[in-house]
Image (cartoon, rainbow over all chains, first blue to last red; front, side, top):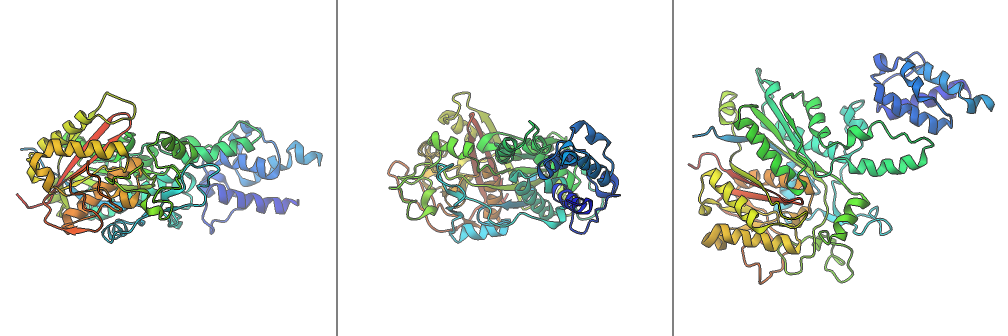
Length: 85
Length: 419
């Protein structure tokens, strides 16, 4: 999967989990809390879904340091499952 | 004399429709909201006949809100009913409403058990032991008043009665008590329920409280006939989902804001059996009916309609009929009694809130909803308003509800201006 495809899939997943309106723009720079209104519970739900969808393991202690969609994308890319591939 | 408490608004979402108007029209025209539901399949459920709200509950205005993320259906149903009641009340029109003094008293017997059921499957699929972070917030009963407070910007005292099948009636009584004590100026009260999970359906069926699948039952040919309160062949209740809410306030506040009350909540009473985990206690039920009359300051003969708990179980309908005979004496033979559970099924905690909302319509329109599918039982010889709606003069009505755990609640509503 290309980085770009991964971003669009992550954006769709974020929209679905946080029930964002179809008109909300989601980019790598989007800040979860400030730009998207995605709160700390939503982030936990999103990371659970990400692990299932992308088949990766993410240390849940890292959730607290996620600020943007790009931050989560980076965690996915750096997951051991994807790096080995 | 105590300051009267009045009803300013009401709303309901039931198997007969997503609004109070739809529910009331359906009841008066003798329609049933009960049918078979293929997803309640025989591999997992002991009954597939149920009363469900069959309109989409999606609301684009809720995008991104907590309500859109919490899948427990009782929250969505309860919010819709509460919003309808709140808009109906007119309390939001004009300035000066003290939103910190509007109480939220909205309950449920079970809360978000449907979310738990779905999450058990999701947990089995996940590698970790994590649950959805929405599970706990969505399961707790007081998330219903919590979400209503958030959406409607109301901030008075919050109570979430979990009194089994009396939850809605208790919520109305508690809301009235908060107003009477001066802790609140108004109260948005009611209940919501939606628990189509194997635990709940099969749990009630195993207790023989809920009618299970039966080949030789009249519901085999016509599912709607599964619920037949006060009938000789009644054999258990039919599970339903739904929600309803009333807006109560002091008569003084209604006057100050120039709002026209829909009815007076003339009296209420609640008590505890202290007797059995699930079986009713006839003596305490009798006491609750009598106490509500006394609280309303009315003699038994002043009640023109009795809206029954009437679950269609063998025990309830017999015990309730006897309690009515005992409390109303000679008037019992002249007192029209009906159970709308024949049309709607039994929505557990929500049922008594829906029944209270229906009583407001009875007083407004001077017509009684019927008990559907009734076949006379020689032991139950009162007037159950069988078959079709009946226009009549109605000045005061009583509505009763009784729940597992031994909880009883009785409400008395009166038409305004009949003194």
